[in-house]
Amino acid sequence: MKSVHVTRRIPAQAEEVFDLLADHANYDRFRAINGSKLLREGDPAPNGVRALREIKVRPLTFEEEITAYERPSRLDYLIVKLNAPMQHHGGSITLVPEGDGTRVDWRSSFTVSTPVVGGLQELIWQPVLARGFRRVLEDVDRMVAERDGS
Image 1: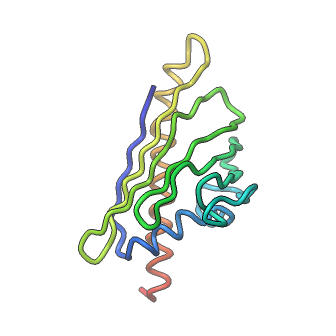
Image 2 (image 1 turned 180 degrees about the vertical axis):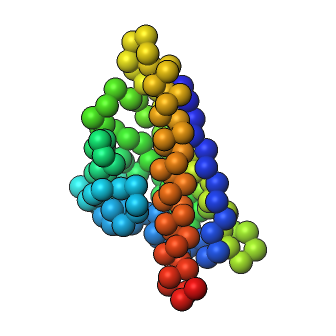
């Protein structure tokens, strides 16, 4: 099993950062994502626990279910369907106030189930996923700056 861990300090309140990260239907505004849609609303609606979203990150298409929704401090998810031989073991995004901003801590773990070469594929996927998470957080940072007129 491999893990991905990315952190970033974003100069905005945790509520604002959380809302951008939890807005499942609009994930396609992030550079790394080619399409997204909310398939099922969660509790609280629309983005809470049991919300199901489809995300396209070419060449992958996957469905994620929200497993924890604690606004503004935690958002957990599990990929329940994926068009690749990868098993997701869960992801968690935690947000902690830090001065006048928010420290975002994003963790995810997975295994690749391909016989013989699965371990090698995990080593390839690990930096690819980390780069994707970093780009999403960079985009959140950019969106916050644009809202603030910076």
